[in-house]
Length: 150
Image 1 (cartoon, rainbow, N blue to C red):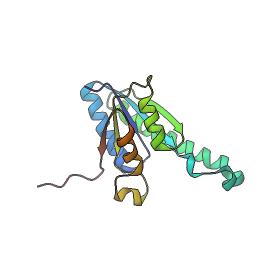
Image 2: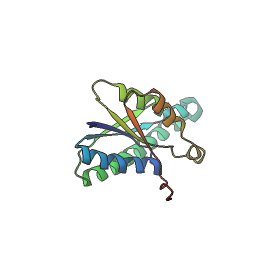
Image 3: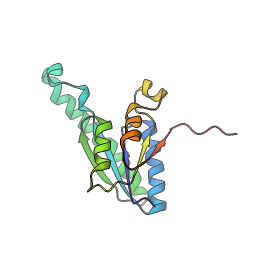
Image 4: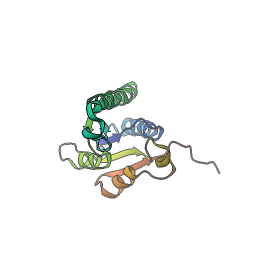
């Protein structure tokens, strides 16, 4: 089956559900997990934040580390040895770049339906949509709401 799963994480409930799904799949398939957090620096400008830019970036990096550490701990509790990756840039572009990198050998992406803000949770997020349309590996999109019962 699949051997190397990429799990983009942003701290949202959808991403956390995607992580749970990816852990279960990795256990079943004896696959490797690559946990990714992209620090979205595209929304900040050094000029716009003045002297506060460095503090904002440090805070974002600290948050990134917290998200990945929590995910790593969950994967390790399940008996997996995940790889943690942090990148800076536009999340939708970075996810696709990593998925296409020959040395990454990603063959499945497991990601949440939408991200952390309220508007994006109402629809399939633009990042998820971009990844589904542009990534070569297969993509599983996970929702944080349980499916309705018949």
